[in-house]
Length: 286
Image (cartoon, rainbow, N blue to C red; front, side, top):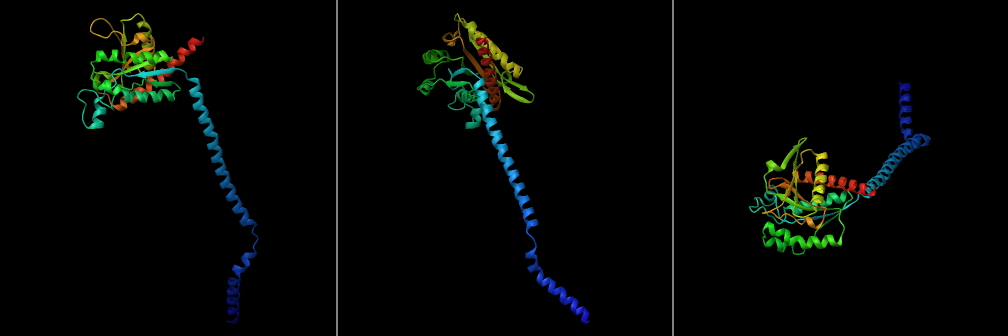
């Protein structure tokens, strides 16, 4: 009994002294473990920084390189500036614009999107600015008069600046069954080109239209309709294309195309214009 009491006394004493004795254990092992953990954390953090620093300049370099290797200057304008799309006007106002004209959901809105994509491809792009465009729209001029109305503005703009391509953007009046294509599960608005034949240099405008058409077809077969030649009685016959050999008239979709369909096609146009202008400049350099 006495022996057991002594054993328990020793155990209690050791347990009592243990917190004191542990303070005298060397710190090296604890410090080493702590140092390893901290070093690992720093290595991971430094790796992330290096990776971010490495990627960011490369991304900037890639963007700069893309812009530098793409050349050309484009002018966009809109003879029929308020031509609208039924699905877009319905989404905006809850109803379809009966006259197929709209102040915001129109061809100019799509033109701004094309301008942004062309600029992303390194192409300097401008839109024709007409101070009294809204006033012109309010007059509801007949379509045949619109070309005469916008003509002096176009003439002045191209006399002051050299452009590699000038696009007069329109929306066709035909329905979606003629202006829509499905390619690999995605719907696109189809594009038509109009060439006025009543001036001596129309072949140049026609050639430019056909070249852009070919570039678009390389990307999405069937995305374009026709190059429509017009001349003689009952039509404008020039469409202001006599002002410059590089003016083309583009019919972007029709009244029934959705904004998504139009956006996909605009991306194709931007890529095709970029490729076309690059090839033209390369040929000129040779």
